[in-house]
Amino acid sequence: MERFQKFILLPLILAASLPGLAFCYSIINGPTNATVLAGSEARFNCTVSEGWVILIWLSNGSPVLTVSSSQGPFETSDRFTSQNYTSSNGFTSELIIHNTQLSDSGKIECSVQQANSKFAFLSVQVNGSLSIKNSTLTVKENQTVEIVCEALGWAPAPDITWMTNDSFIDKSKYVTQQSQGPNGLHDVLSILTLTLTDTEILTCLADIEALPNPQNATVTCIFVNSTLENAYSEDSRSTWVIVLAVVLSLVGIILLIIIIAVVVRCCCLKKKESTYQTEIRKVSAEKKPDGDLKNMQRHGSENQGYIPEEPWNTERIPRIPSYSLVSSKITVPAADLHTSSVPKDERAAELRPQQFLRQVLLKARSAEEKEEEEEEEVVAGAGSRLWETGTPLRPGHPLPRLSGCRQGAPHPLGWRSRGGGSSRARR
Image (cartoon, rainbow, N blue to C red):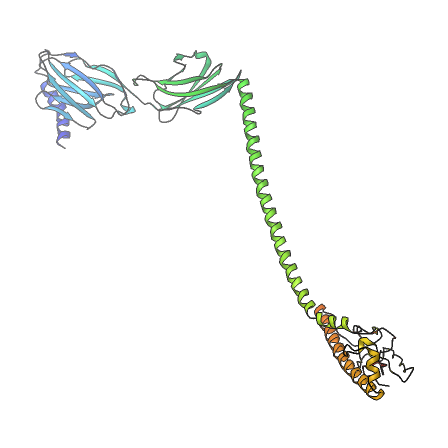
């Protein structure tokens, strides 16, 4: 508030002092032009001779700083400050503009009362961005390539140039286009067109007055000869063929391993199944060896027409005709008489006819009982086999014939079947 009051009183003081002043002072050295980048500082100096009272700094016609010989500077903004120097030649006031902005560009004026003012111009510039879309390009032989360099947000518009291998490219090789946005900044687009004969590094340069060194962007253009390209293509193709062959080999090996595993698994399952069936057959076969052995040891001929008496089978089986003995004498084969080792003729001579007949009948009865037991075992074995094979036993189903008897042949001892049954009559 105090500064504002001093700034208001300044014209009044100046007006009051003018009538009594003599024109014995002047501006010795005025400010000089300055160009700075936005955000930096700008400095201007103004030197006046002795006898001055009021010095005013103006930016584009507006006072920004007032300096009094008696009270010093009156600062109205933090962005505008001053430094004062006194020498034998006079008084020097330095105006400092902090954090310069694009709007600060224009006329900077130093003025004292009743003397000519001196002025200079301030140029605030903005450096934007600079880029090339591709940092690396592959160029074939006899191929024309276009490279685009883009500068965005500059003030003023930058000067675009191109260089290759530290030498400038003729301006006829590239075209530059400029455009200005609503904020006062400029955009520049530069397109370089050329045909390369070798690998080169191209540089795009953007320059404005405030930059100490131009801003740059580079791109590397790799030149590929046709012969080298063909060789590279062949090498790439060979590499892919090798990779494909390796992959297919691995897949084939994996498939082969899978197939072998499946075959081994199937063989193991079949082996287990065959072992199980073999055991079943072995158990079934073990049940009938004794009956078969006894049947093989039986004496006489087999009677294939003999069928055990069953209630449900008597109607379908024809009766076996009975045979009568031809003579009253009974002749027994030597194999049927399990006697001592004495010859048959001598043994028969020693026994009486009644005793001999009685012994024969007893042996025949024993043979009959033994035969019945064998028949029962055979029938039981046949039923067991029908059970194992799953064949139902139903009425009318023929049972296996007994071994040891021939169909239609008489019994060695003269026994015959009655009514298709197993009972026998002695004669």
